[in-house]
Structures are given as C-alpha cells and as structure tokens.
Image (cartoon, rainbow, N blue to C red; front, side):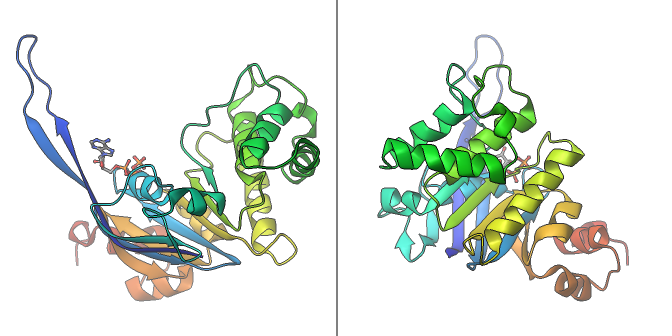
Length: 260
Ligand SMILES: Nc1ncnc2c1ncn2[C@@H]1O[C@H](COP(=O)(O)OP(=O)(O)OP(=O)(O)O)[C@@H](O)[C@H]1O
C-alpha cells in the first residue's frame, strides 16, 4: 500500500542569461499538494498534463529526494526515514531505463536481484519466470545494446520486479511503445494486480486517457502540482458531468479552460 499525503516540492533553477551574465534564480513550485492512496490489488493512475508534477511526485516516492512538506509511506514505512527499507518493498520503473549494454537482459535482471540480496540461482529462476510473463524469451540471453525501446522497457521492468515487490511504481511506462507492446504491458499489469499475480499495489503516471480508462481502478488527477480529483473512471465522469473521459479530465484539471 502506498500513501502520499499532501506533498510539496519546489526547485530553484536559473533563468537563461547572456554569454557574460549569470541568470537570475527562479523558484519552481513543482508539487504543491498531491495526495494519493493506492491499495493492494489495485491499479492507481496519476493522470496529468505535461509538467503537472507526476514525475517529481514519483521521484519523492522512490526516495530520490525528500518532500519539502507532506508524508509518504510504503506499507507503513516512511520513505524519508527508512528509504532503503521502503525501496526493498517497491519495484520502480523510472523514465530512464539505464541498462548495462554489455550485459544480456537476463544478466541485467540477475544483477539487480543480487543487489537486492537474492542468491544467483533464485535470481536466475526469477529472470526466466519474468521472461515468460513479459514475453521476452527471445531477447533474454541477448546483449542489451541494440535493444529497441520496447525491449529496453521490458528488461527494465523485469529488473524492477526481480525481488517480487509488493508495490510497483511506473513513470509513464508506455512512452514510445507500439500498440502490441502497450497491450502486452497492460496484460502483465492486470496479472500482477490479480490474486494469482500477487495482488500487487500498482501506481503509474501517464497523460494518456485511454491508458487510465483501460487499466485503472482509481485515478488521481494532477494539475499544476496539485491533486484536484480522485475516484474511479465512472465516478470522475459523473463528477465532471461528462460522457467522454477526455472531457472529464479537461473539466477537472483545467476548469478555467471550459466555457460554460
Ligand atoms: N530538477 C528540477 N529543477 C527545476 N525544475 C524542475 C525540476 N524537476 C522538475 N521541475 C519542474 O517541475 C514541474 C513539474 O515537473 P514534472 O517532471 O514533475 O512533471 P510531469 O507531470 O512529470 O511532466 P511530463 O508529463 O512532462 O513528464 C515542471 O515545471 C518542471 O519543469
């Protein structure tokens, strides 16, 4: 179970400047009040436009930096206090897949398993099992350099799942995938949510409506750094009084854009 309670994060960046001048400092409010409760055996989507604050929220969940304010816990473990313990309970697929190009897909997966404290045989057996789940048997023993975008994503996902974590966090997982790879990923996520697949708690970020409609039990709409609505797809349609989910999203995320 993942709980994110009213988190905030601001960054200080520099504006552009001329050749001989330093830019001035500018504060960016990346996240200013995001709340999300993701239960076990459920898929929860963080839906927002570009720059809404999804990646920043997931980076704080992954313990990469602490929130300025707010609370994040994974299975009751507070991420900023015990980040390694919380990380052991998560499988994280970030935006950069960063595989070791000279290792095969299997070796990439096994290496991560070893880092998670698994013995070599168990990690290897798990790589074979994940190879089947993610339909990557054909590439399992190929070196990762030259992998397509979809093959890299599958390897990175298998690596994230090697230690069989109870919680799975994915940042825009279908970015750059074709229709077949997207469908394969959806099927894998549905399996992981099911009781046979372990009843995982799955959280993913996206800006794609179709993804959310097809997969999510619960959706959190994020706009300009804030969570502005949450509920199932039918509940959000009802709340926005819309028949198409895209219209519901625009009404909820950008009410100022909607002419009455
Ligand atoms: N390290 C950083 N320094 C300065 N600003 C940042 C930093 N990281 C994120 N931001 C800013 O915070 C805001 C939210 O960014 P974030 O990447 O979380 O959004 P997002 O919802 O994931 O967007 P996208 O769908 O485009 O990836 C943006 O305005 C972004 O430019």
